[in-house]
Image (cartoon, rainbow, N blue to C red; front, side, top):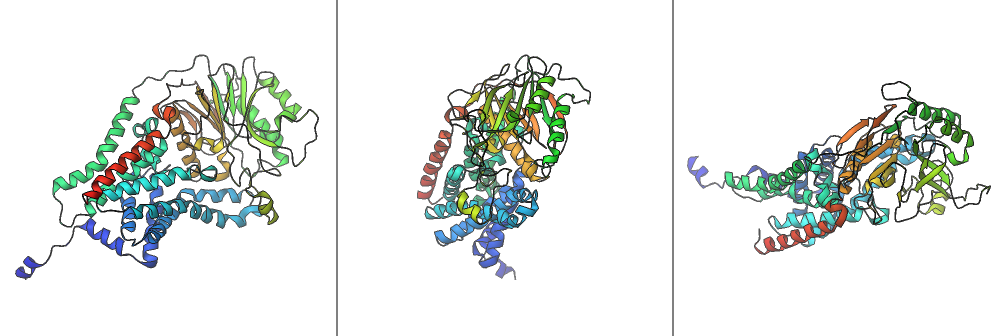
Length: 545
């Protein structure tokens, strides 16, 4: 027995055996592993932030491509992994179809499967492209990161874009790591994440013999060194003292109106009165009639009617706003270019706006949403889809119109230049500030009541926080039912109201900092990272490493 043991080949290390088994998978087992690995990857994002899971799931993705004999099989592996990833990250979308279940519930199965299936095409394409340049060793991890980074950038831009839960967001928690968004943005962090997370296990999986301690240490260094550098930068940046805009006191109102009631005519007055009552009450529950408050912020489409066409509502607002107090509210409005007294028809343009009213309830500034939600605020191929009974989810006939681009800043008394963002406009890295002037504050009005008590509102809020770091500007967020809050330019949440909490919060306004590197050069640093990866892949590929 001893002689046999002496001449028998030593088993490959455990990780190498795992790699071989995953590479050899066929049929439904291969599909199941790909979908499961993609789905588990969703644990790395808000609100769970189980980031280390990516050290296990992304190597599986690489090994599935290893086991793909051609680009078609690689595409299938990437698509399956992507389907699991997007299904588990976006399942909450189904909640929106239950708000008016009698009209939209039949679409729910299609929404929660077809959207992930469509987005997964990007990952399938990335895996297929990577397979065309696949080499051995760490070279292929660089190729993997390049290909997936490119398709993720495309996902954020093609067909209006939808960059929800980019892999880079896994490197924005906890707070010290989030500071790196000031340098690289979410897309640059995506490139880093797509190398850092798979590299250690892939390197160990390539070893045919039991690795020495120094080999294991070198593999771990592939992850520890980049993440350590990002953390060190973040810790240094967080030492910057935060200053505040003088003579500004904000009150953010969160009415927590059930989405099913939001647009019912019988609730219009009650909803409006709730906003007024919450505005006149401080967070301790005492009525203070807005004494000392300079700016009141209400959420997206706060009033379930067109406020500029509601003189009774405007009169009430004029009576409650003290001298020098401004109301900033999400509001619907009809085409402002229409002559006074023009009839409103189904063809009249409707805008989803931010409306600024002075102490006399007179409009002094507006912002009209430019980036509309497909199927939510407008219906692509509207005539065709309407003919088969498919409608947009939001109330009102026809689609919303878009505001002017580039997105203008608002100039509101007492505040630095204001960038208005409605709902998911805060989702797009490098595209929130579109003009030459940099904002001193970003005001985001939203309504995540569509998505219930799911992961969706937490993910939305976290991604909006990252915009504050990228742009070096504070974020003031008013949501119908959460999460509302004030975030400083370092991503720190100064005050907040959670999901389904009815109330208000008062806050001072943090000052913006000098525009960070990402705010100044955008995704050019992503291009530089990918160029470094390409050179590294070529050099290692020649050496077979």
